[in-house]
Image (cartoon, rainbow, N blue to C red):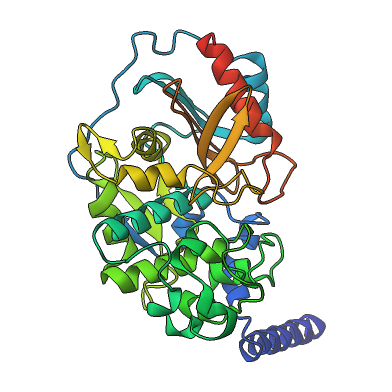
Length: 383
């Protein structure tokens, strides 16, 4: 008994020392990481982790339900689609043809209204909000210096960084995308309760505007620019600019770093459902028009879904671009295989949400699952 008491005493002391060390070394965000992710059995962010964080409500307006296609759910998943859905833990798979729901299915206890984390699909919304700020005159142009809004980036190479560089991921900063490292900046950004402080500590190591480098940090800085420019919180700006005008059927949540600092995790973390996410794909498919009304400037949309850099044809401004079987797709993409995939010429939108994208965890390149979700949708459509 005395041995156990001594053991517990020393364990408590060691734990106390560890916690003090985390605060001294400014790595106390790891306590939140352990509590919200690692102790739940996960090694990275997961679909319903938004319930563990502070969120701000994005209200919907008058719902505009998607029309139902005359051939709705008349075709089953192909064997290949069924196989990958099971292997990768798909929770939603939806095909929209001619702006009508042609096929939908939900799995693993999720349904059409279930919320799950968007992860990096949020980047497309942020870029769209930049377009809105340009249209409304809050931002002068894509070439406006970031330092006009965030003076911290006003010296050296950082002074050359523009708003457009952030949306096209060409900032040249020291950001890295090591999702599975507890000590990477992307992990710190996910768990730190003062995200602005983290972002303002970034350095620019390469000349901005020269090449594409996938960086969640660019989107986060862009959101800070938009908030400074508009004087509006990102979740409010999303609500008034897109969520309500697009007739989303459900309210959404956008994670913030903390109640005190109230900065959205702009590079990720909008909790919503497949059919409401799909609306943003339709908006870009129709060059910013919704129900006959121009919601977003058509020229901005056209620029967004074309490559900025010829040597990086996979990315425009906030959107991924992919050619497959002679077709041109643009898409929103998220960490665990969250996709809104659009082929405007065929008037097709494919949405897939799930727990995993498979064994390939590379960032900035296409994973094999995307091709499967596209190919099998077209087989189901008979194309």
